[in-house]
Picture 1 (tube, rainbow, N blue to C red):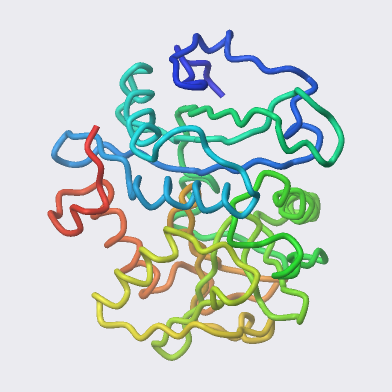
Picture 2: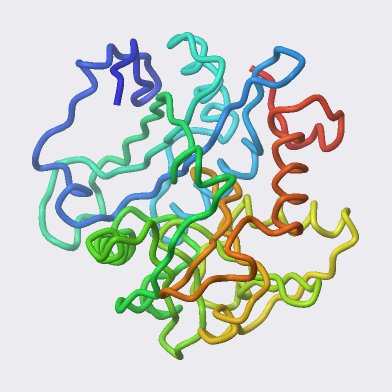
Length: 305
């Protein structure tokens, strides 16, 4: 990661190298913290816009609420911090990482009075799974690691400690020569990838796991559903079995980092034609036009910087 000028920390812009915390920081030891991943895009008009900033910050507050953490700032303060950190660091495009974490006043599992700290970090980040993957697609592996049960880790929160589960799955997949892991839930149904929501296409119908399952309620997922419906596609949310993925016409992943990434092979089974399918391509093109192009559609999704 390239070092930039500043990080927003507890209400102030702090020099990058001065944004430090104690090794006794509670979240470092126990994982009780919340974060968001947000992208800012430079559009065809030349303006910089943060994509669905309000929804991301609202989800950050929801994640904190799930953890019984009170963020010591109003929502609008963090929205402004996200815009300001881009300006201070001279970024016309970038990835934003708001982070809520607990201080170092007390160790042990029960530390109800530790200070709740907030930081907002920005950096340059290209396509998460690689630029070529956006067109050619990736190889995925169904993980041996199960996505945590819906009543185990509160999957609707984007919680720091939850991602150990995802990291184990990702590392297993990469070590075996794959690009990404696909995780099943405790009942054996498809949940999501290590850091992305999943969609499949069969006979012209787009399917995706339900938010009643142990998946993150992805903001890019919601974007895909909206855009796909506008394009005239039928969306079905519900259970997907592993073998249904193998026989799908198309599979693609989506997320803030991954954007819209096709999957061309799962467990050595070629998906469809083994290339980005026509439905994926249309949704992907529509998505990039909304975030980076010149379409005036969905201005409510773009916060100008």
